[in-house]
Length: 360
Image (cartoon, rainbow, N blue to C red):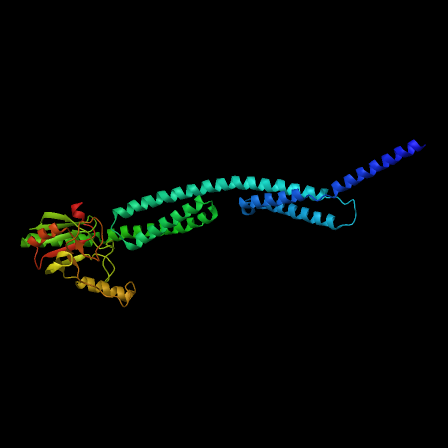
């Protein structure tokens, strides 16, 4: 009998110990699962899952929060057999969903990055095209500003994309497209203006040639688009020189300081042997047409009310740089300036046009 009692006691003790072990296991908080769930959520968020794979990320977040609440409920309860199984299950589901959200987000981010890179490549091609168009035209400050603004934004967006900030980089696309549209509109307007004024420029050059032929005298024609100054004698071209123009030479001159080389028919009013730019032929700008255009601009608001019409337009030396840099004058090399001074004099006709079609 005693032997059986001992065995029963041992068995009871074993059952008690097993029960305690089970209770301890059930009552052990799933801290590791909670920490892993938090880490998985953070990793998913780092991939942009919160904004890319929104539903899956939110589901993972909900399971993590629910698991946390389940842990708190068990730990604050008095029933010794309370179980953390539900909390553990919720947390492990949160981990699974977070990993899924991160994977899907990464894949989507790759696709979006590839799409953004393609958009940037198209924009770079567009900029290359417009750079070529601008280089073939007379410079206009406004058009250059549009181009440079678009190019600088694309450079910045490309750098952001390299840093992994695709969303911020993509924000520049619409602005760049607007700038390029404005540039296209401006260039179309330039072509329309060229077509509209071509007859006027042709009349000016034809009259200059006719007067030179009739008088047998010398005349000068500046073709802004080809950056050439042509010397005529008795109506025939006897020489030509490359020339630099105003830094904003794609415009007709409207006012002082606009950097545009004027277009019209002028005369040499004075020979300047001591010019700041070697030697010079001073033109009688502004003429009556220039004054009327200036007054009309003041009236319609295209020219500021306090603006001045300007003057001191010359054909001078120190040119031959291959770029337009003057304030509106025509600059040739010093050697070519010497040649001009041997044939030109006060009263010599000087006609400046944007395009001289006759020589094309």
